[in-house]
Amino acid sequence: MRRLIYSYHMHLDFETPVREHNFKLRCFPSTDGRQKISDEHIKICPVHFSTSERDSFGNMCIYGTAKQMHSRFSVDVSGTAEIDINLRIKAEPHQTGIFKYETALTSAGKNIREFHRSFEPRACAGEYERALYMMGMLCGEFSYVSGRTGINTTAEEAFTMRRGVCQDYAHILLSLCRLERIPCRYVAGMIPGEGATHAWTEIFDAGTWHGIDPTHNRECDDTYIKISSGRDAQDCAINQGVFYGGGRQTQEVRVIVRKK
Image 1 (cartoon, rainbow, N blue to C red):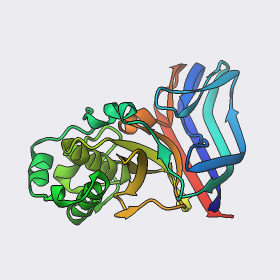
Image 2: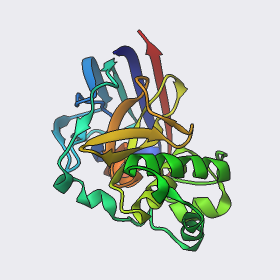
Image 3: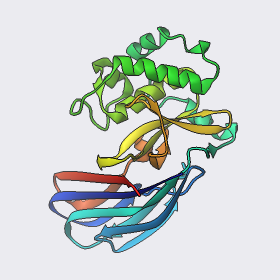
């Protein structure tokens, strides 16, 4: 078991002040079969009212309203995570069906399908092994380059460029796995160091979810803190909201994870 200390900071600056800001935040690690969260502290500014509940994928969300005029909206989250890779997140097969089907962001186009036809993953023993095989093949074809893709870039678009970031790696691997009808889901979380949130993939096999990181071509270990999971990145959106006013917006995210 490993203990990690984490902090997540996000601030959103508005060109002109806004009011009646109704928000939904999904940036809170929660306890599950693999990780235990403690000493969590959450600060949202400004906030008039807030409440918390889990979404349809089991992710912890805070919903709230900031009624007063403001030009900056910020969220700070910190806590301790105990990670045990010997434990698994279990599920029943009937609970995983939704994760077999492509989404708008993970739909396989001509280039991904052609790439998939070059594989021999069925020679692998199980679904998890096939996913590892495809992850290795992907990493041989794709390079980490920031600034080429955005939050709405599809798996097919990113793969065609052969360039992208962790979100793109995860979406492409999801696309490949769904061609194989392997239940798989997108994960947003944090890893040691200082930077932004990270993205990886979970594969369902033999009754449990297994995390693999296509950006680094490795299995997830006890240094990965999970925040949320879903069909793709849209299901794990950190910040969503509506408000009056605002103009242009700029967002900054800073994540720090260190060993305790």
